[in-house]
Amino acid sequence: METLYDQTLVPRILFTIVAVMIGVGPIFADFNKTHATNPLWPPHARFHVVWQVLSQNGVSLVILYLLWSQSADYGTHITVAAILNYVWGASFYSTLASMKLYGGALKDVNGIKPFRFNIFGNIYFVDTNLFGGTVLMLVNTLGLVLLCQ
Image (tube, rainbow, N blue to C red):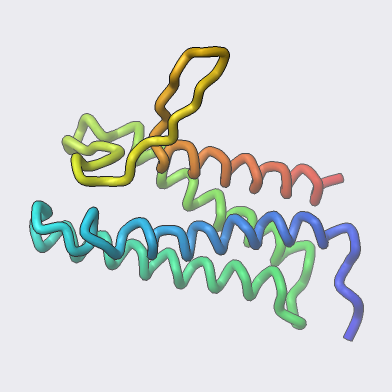
């Protein structure tokens, strides 16, 4: 087997981090009393959150295959993996931007608490979904920049 291209190693690792986080993170964040088993949620909403998490798990497995398969065409497959990570980000930000249309919110009253940042004595609260999604898309972008060099 030919050695994996050295110049793709760091981008593949970065894309892997994003794929694992968007595949595994929602299992911990959503398969609990704040989402999938939340008694305040309608049963159909719980159905959809489980479907969404399992669907993303499948996409994340495809991304990992594209990045690490021995038969992978590293130029094309790595780029497709990065794009699939961006599909997750695009759907997150599109959902965020359209919340007023369907009465959505980033969190529930019994949901995960926001991150608290103390910057020069000023306290800022940032939603965990927004913070995590933004960090992951920045990591994915860094991987793409490094891949294109």
